Image (cartoon, rainbow, N blue to C red; front, side):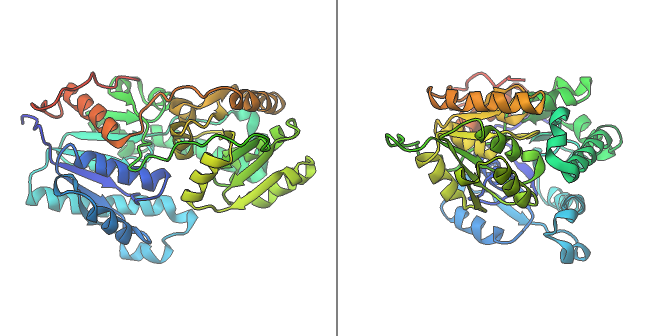
Length: 413
């Protein structure tokens, strides 16, 4: 079958929520992105507030850029357990099969040229979209970022056990999960969020993998404002208060930075442990724990209050907050692994706990005192759409558009 210049795309977007960050925001942004390439039908899970948010977002779109939405829920037996953290992966796998059943019905009713897995962005779980008899694009996905093991003891017993469980899951996903392997084998193109994920794939798969993070903004964040003269230098942390996000490292680094303060946005099961750490290190008076914070308020803090965003996650495939900070030219200090580096973070080498904390403490004021590096990516939706289309054309998945000049495809892997 000859490729079309306006391909009909069937997208699997388990997580998709306008106005959010992370998986939900990426799912919606990429659904919008694909709808500008060709008529797009997206299968989406209707979690709380999703229907109203999407209805409001669709109302503002012209007809030729409006995706068609099909809501696909988890099976009825699963719904009483929905929303509980320990069932999330089971919910996702159950949704995959209900989505596949819906997708097959849609394919029987009308022609599609391409199927695309958008979210979750996890390569070791796999996608039932790969079981359709259509050209298949997988991603952007992550999977390959492991923790610096010498830092794991600092996250506590529960956090350490969680890291061991995650490592076992990644190993099982790579070697034992037939759906994941089918997804890699069937994919005509794999978009990966970081270099570690490309290298994590088996060698024969890597030639089809191209680096392209999933951070794309429907509405770009407003530019950062100049910091008032004399305002206290401020570090901002944005993320869940869970062991692997590395807030403990930021608190330790604050102890080596007299005069600095830390604003920590987020909540999680490590919140009490982190407050205790701040008291133990004598910095509790310079740490403001904001708890769960609305995205608009996070963006305001980035724009008006922060000198540096610190993102010392032990393993992060992307990092939506990193992309937002980089887009508004707020310096980001991160560890030397995973998505934050690919998005434009300033990497600090992760070795022993003491050495890593010392490097963070040195990098933070250095980053604040210099203009941030130019972003390695454009996070603008229209710009990324042009890059994606050029890549699809280069791979023979869509025909060239006759009315547009196309740049060279983004071959960054």
